[in-house]
Length: 89
Image (cartoon, helix red, strand yellow):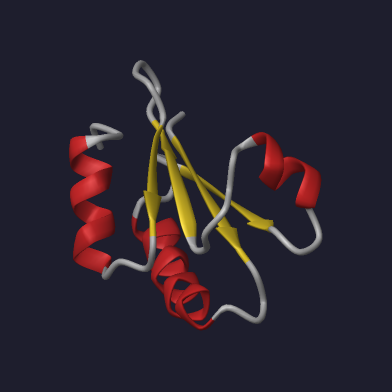
């Protein structure tokens, strides 16, 4: 199943805007996409492996294609476009 990984931190203002949007997406696309959240303050090693230097960073992982990273907050419409264009949902 396609996945989205949200790299965030509790102190990050833009991350706080993205969180509720991803919760809505998770409900709307239930059974079609898996959403993971990685707290970069708590998971520094994992964040380093993915090369996270800026947050929020959103990694879109399609089922049959290369993952793509998006840096910065985006509106719900932006996520829906990525779900369609990148994840083919």
